[in-house]
Length: 491
Image 1 (cartoon, rainbow, N blue to C red):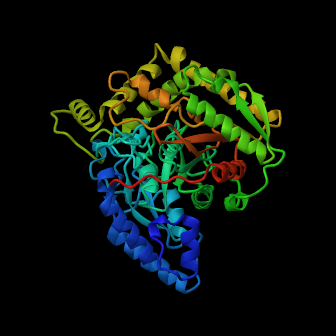
Image 2: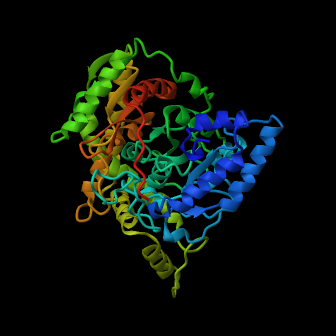
Image 3: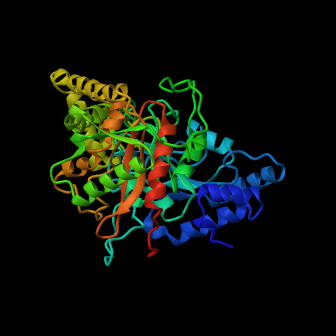
């Protein structure tokens, strides 16, 4: 029998339906793989007993003919999603051993459809980071390595545990969140597929908040088809989330293999950065030609406010973070440090519980929201955000169906190589992704090639609001042309 962990989600679904193997066998194979890959630090909590119980239940349902869309499929859950009765920490000391008494909407829909939970995945603390180095559980290792090197690389962030686990074949797919590129950047760094849906497509209820107007849940998977299958279960209206949009969720999987003939693909001139590696430029051109060969039409477009996106993002996101993280005060749940009075309790708990990057962003956010600076920074950033959104609207009004860009400005880098002395160096990793969050649009990252050191690179497709199907159709064209990549096993 083929190694069960090497199957795609779609192949596993067929095997389960054909009774070639059971969900329990599939789950055990992944639990065994997780045990052997602990050096990657992708999982912060393994739940083998719960996984096996869920797998047995899935097998019983399959035997009765009650087959949900994800029946028996083992998944990993980013530690930002509340899981009832299972520790959820956002990878921060401040949440301590917090065990929710409720289930996030997204994960409850995955369990409704028959999926199996293998455990909780590592992420940057409160999703603040581009390398998965800010987690209180330590950094995550990328299963990919440079050719001829033993240096452990970052998997990207903040959903580094999700991307690493999927790439290393530890789970068949994973939940993730994207505030400024936290699904698409790690997907590009690990040769996995990651989609950030349109803002409002997936419920944010039960997900630990970072920046509420930017956060959006989505899947990381091994193929475009697998990502489509996962998103169909994750998406949908939720009355508990006022930003959730009440429109029908289409059958995303049906978009796979659809013709892209006649589609207009925008190539934004502003994404041609000074000093961009020639490999990224070459890959971008190759992706454009693959889409053209499939019948799409390439048009140059302009997104003039792109250059302001990163600074505007790093005002809006920390401002919302400083507000959202005010609830961690040591009074109601999580960490509580000893103190003589309430002010000291707040100070001691927050100083001890928050890591350096989180403290930095909370302080920036508090500063830009303060009375003397609100208009100069926060209000101005929101005006820039409106202009960024309008740039995309103008492109789509001219008949453009999707926009093709690089996903990242480089391949994965070594742990500790960036951002030590200058945090802005790390923030620049989000340069191609933050515009999508600022405009609330859907974006997908698809593995597209390798650099000269054998590391994976990805391309990004940006779509019109709620037209994720278009991204799946176009993404599959790129996937078919580029092929699929898996890392050489070293762990």
